[in-house]
Image (cartoon, rainbow, N blue to C red; front, side, top):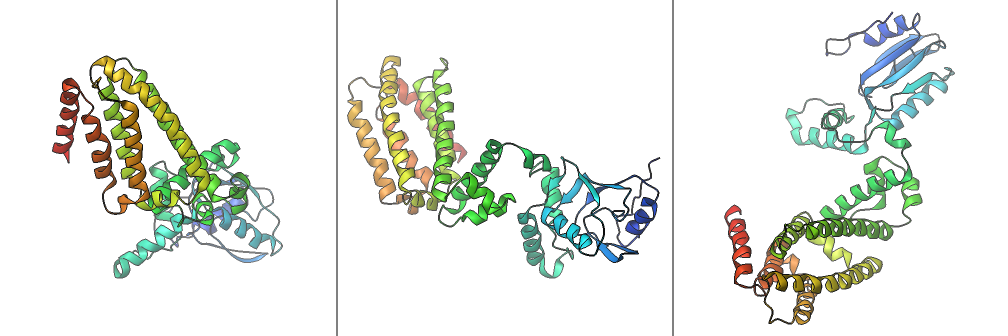
Length: 355
């Protein structure tokens, strides 16, 4: 027989006390939602207790308590609350946690706290436990579930790389600490350092992953016979502008402080320059690039221009998209035949109108 206790979404209704009472004659007690902001007062032979995350009914030896997938699971708080029971001679309860329960992260608490401070006198009186931001993420299908804690190392590495590169791009590399990355993912620093021994190793892997993904995309796009060299240039431009627009100038400034990363990028750019010659040869064959140009010289000049942009940190003076537009796209236009210019100008005109 299943008995359900449902409150009126008000609080202080005695749900915990009633659950504790019914638990005496039950086998399984399920908490299906809510988080550590709740407070259920239980008085029994062990003393007086205020439960916040554990299901009421954990004091009976014959019961199994389940934390369901709707609960905002604050793992450190759960461990702390279990210890508070055993420290007072309560037998360790039988607890099951749904593998689909979502984990409340430290940043949820931070968001909650900042929002209350922002609202000031108009605040909602939040307990600052991170509940509202947590459920916002949960319903948006963002965040981490318990089952992800039991994934393989590769899955965890991908999450670390995705999260850290996002932070690096927005805030720069130097200002993001390894502690910040560990905290944002809800993992220990030890776990992070077991996978990446230092920040440069993490940055190098993140940059390599991003560049390899870019190469795969552009290779597949180039091999599509329906795409001309002008189509490929436009796709290249769109991808690069999207990347540059998402990054803080600090990110590019900081990159130069990591020797291993710069060595990797220098080697990668040398390989890409060799492919670029084949690309321009294809463009001449298709009739979109001029045949009277020494493309070896043009490639060297293009590389020198971008090196100047980075060395002199021109991105601190000009918008990166503006720089890329002038250094790359307009220079490419000078290499085009009449037919190539016609297609490129059509794209440039459309881009100007949409800005």
